[in-house]
Image (cartoon, rainbow, N blue to C red; front, top):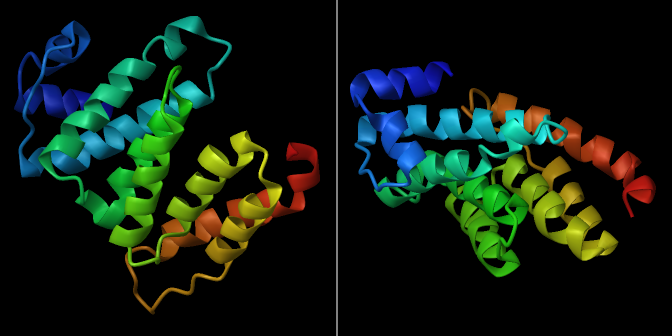
Length: 175
């Protein structure tokens, strides 16, 4: 809500525009707010699958991410591309081909340094396809990412390496 409130303050009527399904061009300064707002909104929806009102907001969170994507598809060195892949894989009627293209773009844009993009591809593409070998290969690849001292990705990568380890440990229950 904080990111959405900040965007609304910068662009009065933004939330109404989002809800009406109209298009809106974001500025470069809006991208961090749009990315984190869409990512947090998507995560809240994922944790609230038993709440129809929350799930009904999925197209809105996706639209906010799309606005950011239209402004700069390379934002966050692939972080936005990974988010777009996750939304595409999760939305009803989503295209696995488009999701895969987003995940591959995220990995390319990060220079292969984003554990999150690899974990997202494992969960968004390999797991639904029932491809346990690809799932495990992506997760092992995520585990192997080493960060340079002071890397801005260090914390996010550590969180995603831990998720990769948990998924590996629970793979038999997931397939």
